[in-house]
Structure formats: C-alpha cells, structure tokens
Amino acid sequence: MIVIFKKDASQAAIDALCRQFEAQGLKIHNSMGQHTHLVGLIGDTSAVDVDLVRANAAVEEVKRVSEPYKKANRKFHPEDTVVKVGGAAFGGGHFSVIAGPCSVESEQQIEFVAQSVQESGAAMLRGGAFKPRTSPYAFQGLRADGLALLRHARSKTGLPIVTEIMNPAHIPLFEDVDLIQVGARNMQNFELLKAVGKLNVPVLLKRGLSSTLEELVMSAEYIMAEGNPNVVLCERGIRTFETSMRNTLDISAVPMLKKMTHLPVVIDPSHAAGIAFMVPALAQAAVAVGADGLMIETHNDPAKAKSDGAQSLTPDQFDALMNTIKPELEFFGKTLN
Image (cartoon, rainbow, N blue to C red):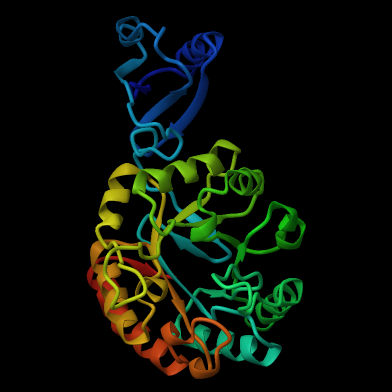
C-alpha cells in the first residue's frame, strides 16, 4: 500500500500517521521526491482501513500495490534512483560505460586494457577474478590474485572496479570493490543476495539466463530489503530457441523495467550476442531504448583470451563504439560520465 501526502502536510501529522501504521506491525518505506512525499507500507495491509486513512487531513491519496516487490517498485519511489560509483553514476539521465576483459589474466593485460578503455571514455573497469564456467575444466579465474590486479589497475588509472562475486564467504575480499556484480547464474542465490544487501557497496545484478523481469526485480528486492538501495539491473540476453548467437538480447526489457522499477538499467551486449561484430549495433540499440549504461567486454588480444574472446572487442573497436554512441547519447539527452 502507498500513502501519498499533501504538499502542505505537516511533518508532525505525517509522523503521527506513520506511528499508527507501525503499531499495526507494518514497516515504513519513506520516499521524498522533488514534488511528492509518500510512504510505502510493507507487510500485511489487509487490516488497514483505506477510507479512514484517506480521510486523514495530511493524506492526498491511498493506493494498494499488488506487485510482490515493494522497495524496488516505481509506485513506491516515482523518481529515478541514481546509483553513484566513484565519480560516475547510473540513472537520472546519467550514462556510464563499464569496459574490460572477461577475465583478469596478468598485470600487463589488465593495466593496458584499463588505460585504453579510459582514454576512449569508459567510466569503470570490469574484470573477472572469480569465474563461473560451464565446464569445470575451463579457466576459473585468478581469484584473490585477480582482485589484487584489479586494485593495481585502479591505482594506475583511477577507474572504479567492477567484478563478480560468487560466494558469500568471499565478501571480505570484496570490501573495497567499487561495484559488486552478481552474475546471471547467481541471480537467485538468495543467501548471496542477502549478504551483499548488508554491504554499503553498489550492486550490479544481472538477469538470469531464463528469468522473467519480475524474478529479476524480486532478486533486487532481496538486496534492498537488507538495507542496500544501490542496485543496478543488467539485461545480458536470455536463452531462447535461437542458436545463431549466444543469447537473445531482450531490448524490450529496458522500457518495461523502467515502468516496473525506479532502479537504473544497463545492457551487456557482449554476453547477449556472444559475437563481437554484433556488439556495436546492440550498444546503439541500448542507448536508443533508454538504457542507463553499457557493459562491454574488451581485450587486448581476443584471439588469445582465456575466456569469451569471441565476444570481446579490441581497444580500437571499443574506441570506435564509443565514438558512435557519444552523439547518440547527446541526441537523447543523456550525460556520459
């Protein structure tokens, strides 16, 4: 249930009504916008007398919410959430590009790629240290050593670092990561979601391979319910009957998620396609449909990459992509960080 207050409602009247709700065992989610002040009531609201609440002099309107997600619901929070990562931001007109290799492989590799993507306009550096792979025999990442190399690249460039966590037990290793990624395979790892929800670190949450949008938002709800409001949603392609590409980019997810939730939405065209030549076109489509950012895999030598070389751009190709989307972003009124 949502209670919208009148513009001239006194804080004392609002507080008094909220105390009544809390006495009924309800939790209060407070949302202050530029023009609107509302509270979301979380819990069993069946006993709340809507007509009685609506009759309160401080109340403008009362609405029941049928969706199972509350904190992530745009009805609870009408204005776009802006998630800040270092000096960059997602949402509210801000557009950020994350770029870097699928896997951190060496100090020379990650430092070179970091410097290259920064020069082209990337706002953050991605790199996998812990790698969830389909085959147990595939490269699993450098683990803690990979995190150390990401920190080294950050010290050289100043770029915030983005990397994936797979296990709640690894959280002490991730405390100084700037944006923690929860990957597609862990989108419904609820213990992991609750663990990152307790951190004061922004979270990039990727959509599962066959997950609905409501399931994605409900996973964000898990994180937010633990106290972490800084969640960025990522559409990275879903599994369909099509076999000519790795996944199918659900470009329609962006406007639908924008309707469902106030959280920023970014697109990962690299994993969506799995083929490097498709990435620039899908990136342009992401900008046009209203995404708040991109995540682009970039490698200094894709042919020799230890993972996902086929979908990785070279630094020159990434630079060309950035030069393509910059005027597009300007046309759509987005600010590139």
